[in-house]
Image (cartoon, rainbow, N blue to C red; front, side, top):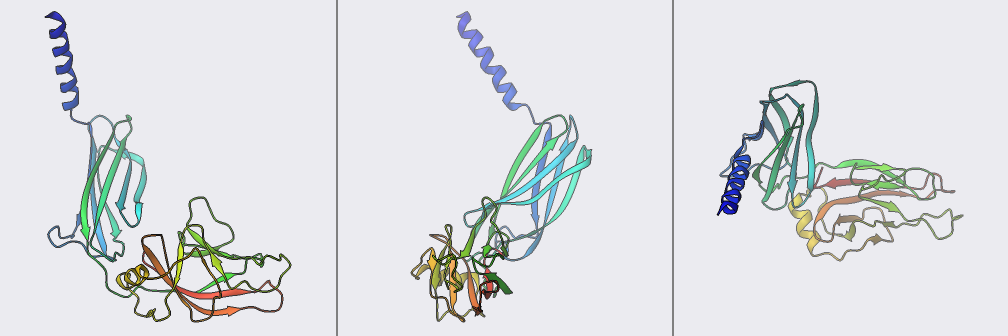
Length: 269
């Protein structure tokens, strides 16, 4: 009987510990986002974050978003030089472009000077975006043997000489003959797929039209026989990420200035 009483007392202590309120509080709301209708895609909203600590001071706040298309993204990561017991932050949040109605989870994390932490989440529904995507024009990607930027980072949306760990990219394919002065007219990527879409209207491209066209296309990690005016959709095994229109391909004498010039529209831009 005494053994059972000890167990009961221990269980009650555990329950009391679980019910103890956290000394740190944090919460974020998306100002102006209509809960019943949904938020607009490709639109600026204001995040209002409240944080406080009863035992220390708030020194660090991180706000992230998560959705099935773009995964985890950091919206804010700030450390306060002078921690405060009560903080109110206002941050601009630009919603991503989606081809379908998508749930986005906004998570807030607060860290206090005494080691206490708190995390809360809220979700919003973001509606599809049908407006044309703004292009990134006059991108120059050099040949693999030029010694110049021959990789295109889809993480940074710019040509680079070398790829950082975790970046999604495509690159020019180097000819088998390392002494060759002929451009390969080929791109490849370990991460994404390419698909030709000759009749696709690049000028009016939206997230919805890119995604709908991509679904029905034949795709491959390598695209060959590139030509000016080619329109190339690109994406993962399941989701479109954007579209490219080749403008010029320059294959000069030698190989130092061999290059591709193109325009790109990214769904995630």
